[in-house]
Image (cartoon, one colour):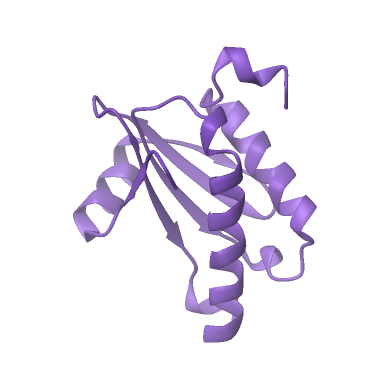
Length: 118
């Protein structure tokens, strides 16, 4: 991920949950908040309720890959948290990708020049 760092601290996640905007889809929830930083920061959350460690890690890897592929389309200077829901376990990759892009579009995270290409 070229332009992205990771969110690691609990208070960063909590600040985003409280003060950020959210977009909900059947497979995931995306929280976003604009910052003044030159790059983006990403956090991915998968609850124990989703499944055991192998399942959670597979969902986490898929979501990170979807983010990585569409990283160039996002406007920079944003903190993002992607929260996987139970349905994301059985979802196909394309369904997750469409849900992620839909959520980003709802939040206005896609830059205007690349929105037409997607």
